[in-house]
Length: 343
Image 1 (tube, rainbow, N blue to C red):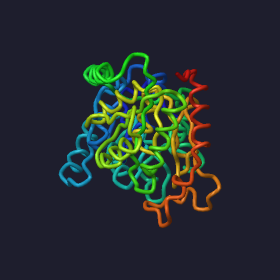
Image 2: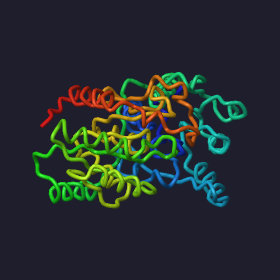
Image 3: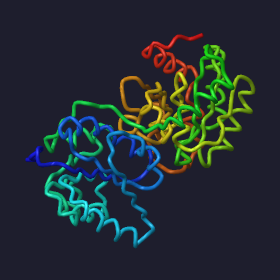
Image 4: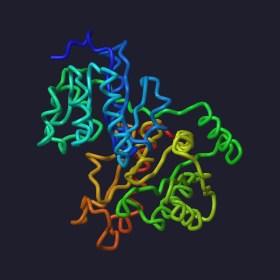
């Protein structure tokens, strides 16, 4: 049992991609509730730093550089020197288990995976595939007797990020425009809805809602983004090249976002933009947009759906054969549940 009044400094460990890190931020409000005066530090990888640095809950961010041996050694000593009272290792791989163990923290919580349980004296859930990835973090808190009733995700935006988005929108749109975002990002090739289908979606949104489309994109997405713009041909705008926080600020200004299972999808939910996620190889019940304000869709009739393959060995039927009528029905549900009126 954690003696909560003794906990003055907490370290959260969460590596991997931006989406995974965003989903872990669901713990912040709960930690602040139980440990109102504690410092909260966060150990992650460099790409996630911009998303966290402006979040008020976080006192300090430590960076794990997986290809740097010296960084790894230095990080262990830094964690030891910081004398954390509570470690929450939401990643629990062999390296983070070792860091947790060597921290000498009184309370060390992690997932009880084989070969790593030695590092923890508090254990998270065993059944990882039973819960949505965000809910899994809340179940983790529940098992170690920490509040888990708040389910808000967080993403840090600076005043500069907000100003950038405001200026872009004022220069390109009027205040009455109904702006819907599209995001072709996907990480894996198999998770990327094809540009031709995205363009079909964009054209339907423009026709049915008198909308304008903003295509947001990140590293490696420009070709697909430009193709979508070309295929839509009118009332479609290509967002300027940005960093991840300015992309988030643009997404926040949109009425809604239609996206693949991706970092931008999770960013959208964190900045509270209603989100429709297009799923193919992944399970939306585990990895879809988190929260009641959002929707997802997939081609349920395919026997290969939820294959979890990085590349599609077939013809990407999960996206190309997903009926546009079904997508637009889901989009209509998304708009209505968020009280967004079509123009």
